[in-house]
Image (tube, rainbow, N blue to C red; front, side, top):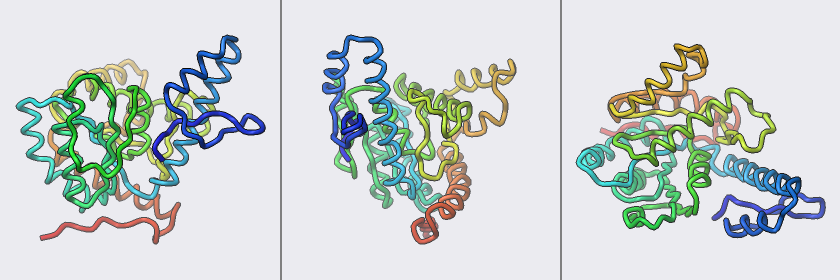
Length: 287
């Protein structure tokens, strides 16, 4: 499936499975001038995307997937991080049983994540964003699946729809912070509205197993986010249990520890839903 977008159609206004580009979406909306029809068209497009998240669950729900959100830039700290990624990916595969690693398809740390994922026997999904800046266009040949997007929001939704765990790797840029904040907002919306919220502009989770998506922020520079969450708890606007999906750790090893712990719960739930034969166990560490 090369596009998550679908257009409305069918005998009774249902949804067809014909891929529709972003330009086609814009054309559909530009042809509508009546406010009521604009709202109906937007809702139809949102419902089409919603169906595609369900298709993702069917395709990927029996595989534990993680997303690695990290900067596309190449500084000293990025190079230090890249040197640690192979051991990190080895643990994700052999101890947590991760089968799919999703990145933004960019160079440097993102490319290294994809390379290490493939080298350790995992699928590497690269959700590329077509940007004019040259540094975003340098990517490697280690991708298993390439999913180009032309806008930030569809890219983020595509990435998060395939992840049971989201890693925010420090050092990060504005785009990485944006992705982590989006993941947190989706978790909070899920907590507030539940599985059957019926609100098309609030994305629901379709990671098959339906456990809360874990967000793991790795490194010392997530101080602002940590302070924001602490302030919300102090003011009584969120409870401790509402933020149980959010973790702050200092090292990749600590992040892998949380992934291993979560994978046990995920695997028990997945086997109950899909059956033992369709859910693989972690390969185990090799000496």
